[in-house]
Image (cartoon, rainbow, N blue to C red):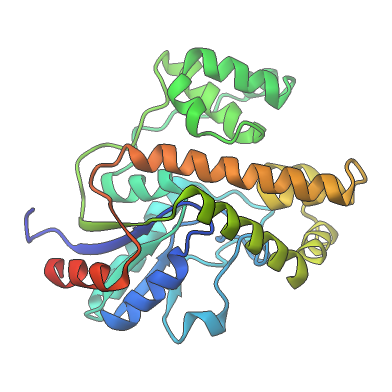
Length: 295
């Protein structure tokens, strides 16, 4: 690969696998700074439910793209790419290594390869699709774009409508990010077997409940984030908001939430397995040697 391309280190893996811990350790050892690539950690006040790294956990390592906007506003891949590119330049000016860390794979690919041409929103079509349930929208998408259906959150109406809008307007499947690499990127995937990952997901959910995740969702709603918006954020925010509305019991909420997090991890792995450039490893010494050879 051309030496002219800027070097960036990318840490990926399913939810709860330990990406954050690894990114901080590598940042300390290789004089790096971390750019978060998480579509929910950009929102202020969404801390416990997203597993946002705390000041203490950062261990003095500067982090970018956390707490960027209010959860009442929209943030998308295009905005992320623009902000991440700016952060990469700032980090490199300091002579440091930019480390991208997160689980929003579409955003990471968009940063590495560039975004495909966007389709302008169609208010009339959106209004029509808005009348359908998430279940019906997902069935519709599955028929016309089965590939996108494999990686989308089938309960997220906003994303389902956008995916359908693109397919119906262009007559083509949802385009993937372009495949011309913009950076010299070393991609490391945090490797966990299924049983270990399930246990990590379970333990983290219990820990988050103890940390006050219910109170966090209550506070977000009190500050003007609608129940629908919380539902659209998915996972923790969806099931906790439904519990707080009295739609489900606490036990049902915990069971459904854990199941959904496991399904989400599977969707992440479906996306990641397609990328043959990812080096899967969980031995830190081996990871360290890989980075040394590349950097």
